[in-house]
Length: 129
Figure 1 (cartoon, rainbow, N blue to C red):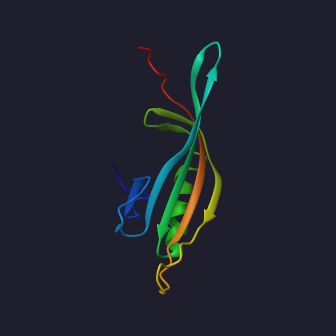
Figure 2 (figure 1 turned 60 degrees about the vertical axis):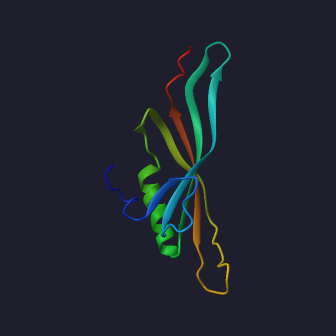
Figure 3 (figure 1 turned 45 degrees about the horizontal axis):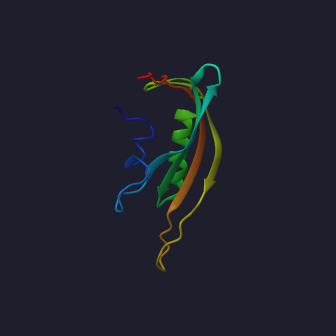
């Protein structure tokens, strides 16, 4: 895998969570839901919408914003192939800042941005056994 604008800005990209002492900024992602389209007469269509959450955390607000913008520049409006999937539409549904206060009396806030995406894909159909 090569470097991208995103990987140049973060120390780690990981599904769901990172180890406790991971250096900032980092990015995590997880699937919020996957709605498949079925036909009563023909069964699965291979079409579905994935709702994906991407979370960015940093000790610097500007870094959090820059990573979120790099992700948006890569994904928003993307159409094409991603692994085994054909992406038909990729849009932001929601974007929120959720700063995390320091657990002690310091001023070391963690700046968290959550970006929720809707990604319409065509996935390979299951092979009956």
